[in-house]
Image (cartoon, rainbow, N blue to C red; front, side, top):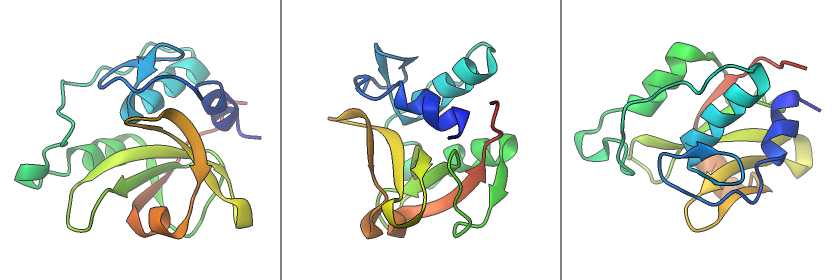
Length: 143
């Protein structure tokens, strides 16, 4: 199992808190990713400027997608591996504003993400979620 996935499973149950990044206390989807990175690498949290829940949607600005592309290696969406960072559009034509970590691949594909109203959960990567997937990035495994 990927060290990122193992660490992400340790965050399951963390409440959803916008802009937070603390396991067991609160995080949003980006906070989960930032917290995982800090936990697995042993480095401080990567600072991010304040952001709104709409992620610049009214302006059509792909801030999140650009920031991830600058830090992680993009890969084809159909080349799934455990530990990949997944980026979603929550509706067609909207900016990408949701991230998660691929946990399982194959017929039982799943991902871990912080979801408003649910906190950090692992859920199936169902066809509706797959249709929203806009980008996939490889994340180094620090095992």
